[in-house]
Length: 109
Length: 120
Image (cartoon, rainbow over all chains, first blue to last red; front, side, top):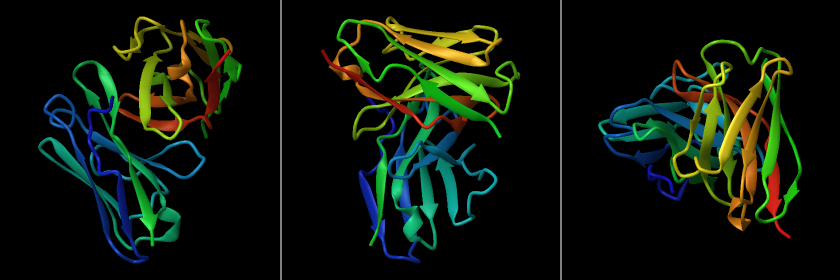
């Protein structure tokens, strides 16, 4: 029962910019930082963006995150074939639970 | 480099207790600032946080699973464990263990995951 809503799919051609939205509420995104995870097919999720807009070491700078109010976004600029994956937003919820988004499957056309 | 590895039965009968262990290498489970976590993913579905434990033994559980979940830690073995009681087919999922960085509220290291099927 995800409380963070994402579009089920997004797509683009190589080189394009793709944006994924994540909608929450005042108890999660509105009051806590947002993280994004990338899950390549058949693998464990990987931390992609933390604290709304920070990239861990090794994550390409074509990935960027932002947050405004109770929503957040992940942008992939210069889309590459290896970016084809599922993407999840996540945040701590003040109901004392860590919540993930519904997930977005990115397809590179 | 911290590494996590899940282990345990891949098949559990309905009404029984699911038990998994996560072994941590490349770092001490007693390092402050980190919580040791379980997350699951139903087949073809999204991620669900189960709970986590601090090395001191303090635990935090997902309210929706709290009545059935127990997470414990063995610092001498650098391991932590999950027990989920009274399982049903709805508990069939890939179970991941992960390290939670409390300074930023994110999971930075994950195990590869293990599929647990609940079936008679």
